[in-house]
Image (cartoon, rainbow, N blue to C red):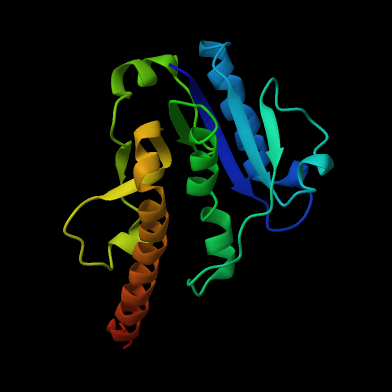
Length: 192
């Protein structure tokens, strides 16, 4: 199997060297390499000039510069830009020959060999852990658990549903945005 681990993130502003995200990313790759020196790693970094501002390398990870999309239906452009690129970047790798892409957020600390994840979970479905993001999930009426997009294994077979998945990711976030906005307007206040 042709497997790969991918990180993808967007810097809103400033020098990437001075952000906690860059430090987290370096530490994540460092802990990953302690347990597996062979698995390929790609790091998507936005905006295009962000990586050229970084003074430290990312070990042996290949860096791909890109501009995160600002086309969105979400009200919060910063939040949308920060998170919307994950799925398109994963699909770009699946379209270019990889069988399984393990997407991880930069704050992932590796405790063991990542190959074990591919060995156990590679197949025809997306694997992820349940997420409990209180800022949203505590205010929504959810009938199924939310997916933690910060760690997900996506197989090549999902390319059949690429357009639908990309559309659903955006539409679910819009529904949550509307529900949270409405909920916040109707929450009682605790004033004395």
